[in-house]
Length: 247
Image 1 (tube, rainbow, N blue to C red):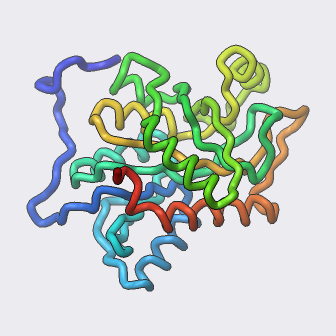
Image 2 (cartoon, helix red, strand yellow; image 1 turned 45 degrees about the horizontal axis):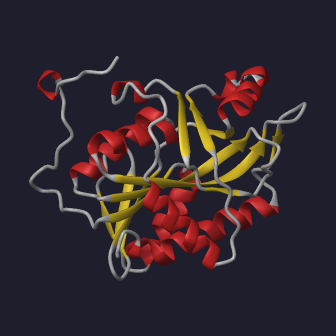
């Protein structure tokens, strides 16, 4: 159910008077291992660690950008993005993993989603549209940067779910065939809805970690190609992060 007037909302995201404003651009890392390692490296490079309730955040780089995370699942990711927006983040890129629904994707492929489809319970409170898209301009900038670094990128629709242990192969096949869904994650559609509601720029870069389109589940979390590709994607984003959105 969508509440159509902010006057009836009980709790609003806000910046406390002791909290510093954020740089305009940042990454939101979903997974704890990636978030921990990226934050550690940024802090060792002179970055400033800042409080972010039950997540974490470091501001660093030259020019400045921020990295936040982890934030697993739609409710936690939405809660985190709301706080980042309250601290005046203008541009956020989700960095995460996804499962391939389409046989056009394999473990290690990099996906920059062009569309979202909600199978989670958070986005409906922000928008009646179950398919709020990511920011087209920011997504296009990311695709161009990856092309410049000779990293192939796949586009397509990503479906987000709250229940990874209830993914029915019949539903996944239908989503692929009828809705053009190529991959599944847990956060993307909810963050698209939050970003559209708050009128900020949001996009995502997801690395395929497992394949769900065959007769059985094929995990690839420990495969070398997955490890190499997700690290390469993160390095490219960090290298160009502060410049996204600049004309």
